[in-house]
Image (cartoon, rainbow, N blue to C red; front, side, top):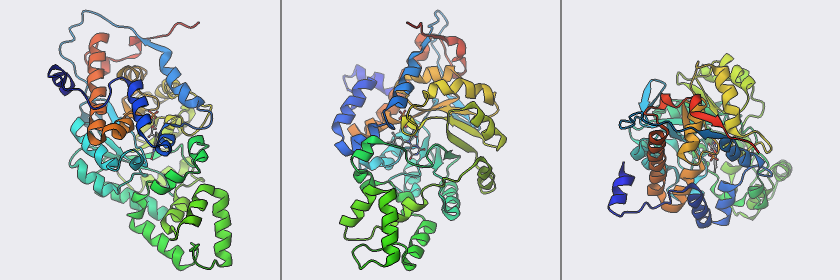
Length: 417
Ligand code: FNR
């Protein structure tokens, strides 16, 4: 692969290959606001730490003399072959890292052969992202809006954009206690926000216009009506940072306000999945599962795949490490649907461990954002290529030549004490 060939000719990668160096350099490179948004986990950061600690409790046992000359990192998902077991996680508000954002990621993902999961919170409309992906594999990640029309429209657009699966993120009915963002009053987030998917949506535009027509969205620069004042107070209580931004802005941010109102449906239950099932023939995956009981419920409600994830430790503080959640879920699912994994994967051996514990594929999160921050499209491409090349070598030195040989018996639990 190109990283070796480049190395022979003395061409250095644009991004560091060591995960901790990559992270430190990228975080140093970002503005304090962007850094806070990307880096911080929920609350005390315990879940992020637990994600990393969980990998440490497993060790790979190398096996020798097994002819590792011919190695195959490819996998099959939903009837399609992919060159490696990696996908890119849906990551929102990427323009905080680089103005190319999702478009740069799309080009990089295509070149690296890594399927991309387009975020509901992307910085560009999915149609534009799909344009960059050309015929490359893409899925769409859905935050389930409390407006049915927006959900339907997003799913319809995703189908039109050639997405081959819908990933419903279930762990973010509310944005949790994110200290880095709270301390900055969500201002950088509010400015960037990642609402292009919404502002480009005809149903969303219709809702914004309706609200404006009905005076439900006050223009704070104008003389406020009693209804407007009430709405402002509600907003101030719910979104203090956003409120402040609006007060200092000369224009009513009708779309931002409407987005905050329609972003999620906190009343959502398992029964609602049937409604979505009726509206698309695409495979439906649910993302954010950490409990085997929830995996059983997901299967009962007809999902086609599960992504074991704790949102990179950004939602529930004090939760279990995502890798600790994987084996019980894999056991519950029993091979009936694919189980994907994310949260805390920083190098190929992490991915190896997740595969060994039963994951069918692994989604990469923050590392590609670090690549984006440091070197745009090239940075993302390199991070993705490095993961694949490192996995290939990890397989060779572990003594396996295909992904399905990465099984539970390649691991032992780390000695304690
Ligand atoms: C996310 N994640 C996320 N998930 C999702 O379903 N939709 C989204 O828009 C976002 N946005 C987002 C932004 C940022 C800055 C981060 C770091 C994460 C969660 C993401 O898909 C994935 O679950 C985690 O990133 C995995 O954890 P690590 O590997 O990044 O620690």
